[in-house]
Image (cartoon, rainbow, N blue to C red; front, side):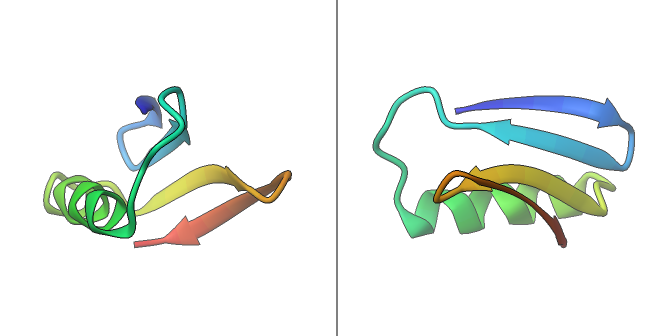
Length: 53
């Protein structure tokens, strides 16, 4: 997975590895939130979604 910072408060997630479990996602979300990121953009089921942290 790669994380691209589109701004200091918004990150875009790209799944590059194929196997990402919910625990890894939640850990990453918490890390981003702890570092001041307020929202993320990611693709799920072929749709682009934005989620507030």
